[in-house]
Image (cartoon, rainbow, N blue to C red; front, side, top):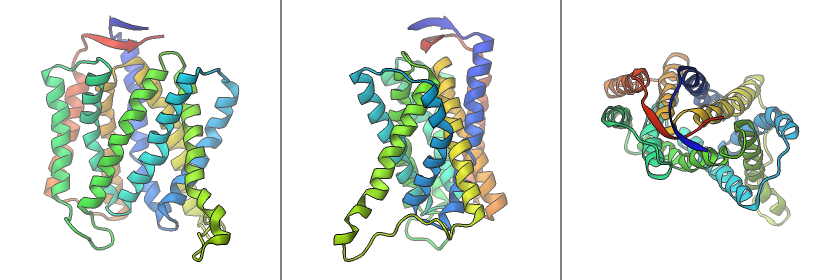
Length: 320
């Protein structure tokens, strides 16, 4: 039950720590996704990623069998649809039209979206300094967009279209985050994580593989997912994306926001743009202009300000 209480140091450390680790692992997601996209389509890459995630989460679901009410089943299905097939297909189509660095840094707009949604729908509150920090991170994301191209760009260059698709995917992720927190009022984070990802993967498989059933009547056949010609590097990237960047991160994030306010925990999503852009520059040879560097600095400054201040009473926290 929600309760007005002071956030204890131990709860803050564990809750924010789980969100921080999730943010670090999420920060590598675009990098490994780009490696796999070199050899397959967005739909097939996302499908393989979540099939690997299910390898890690299926045993969890089998060991934690629960009975959901009809209303909870509807919430799980809606949450899974927005959180997996819709969000990730839009997000990685965006990545296909921009760079890893830009796609990662665009995630900096997520904390403000999350803070607004948490304030409007979850009863959480931030003071003036908290809102200033969150807005600063979004200003940083806006500066990053200024460094992109407005039209079609050469291979390996950022585009406004790709950046905006990534932002659109973050908007769909909001519903997943808030509905997941609602489900965790009556079920543990591990149960919510496992069942949501499994349900979403089934939807993704139907969306990706379903059209192949009509191949006998099609003039242009739909190709099956690539398998034999996929390199070892791509398979490793897909396995890490699924097991570490998806299954582990989603569990840690859900556990974290189960114990701390989502509006404050959201700042740890800014670890993803910082780490992801670094990997893009250092490992893929991408370039960030002065606007992007300044925007990244705003994002990191916002994270430091919001997470090093003392915590007063926090409403609508779910405590075990």
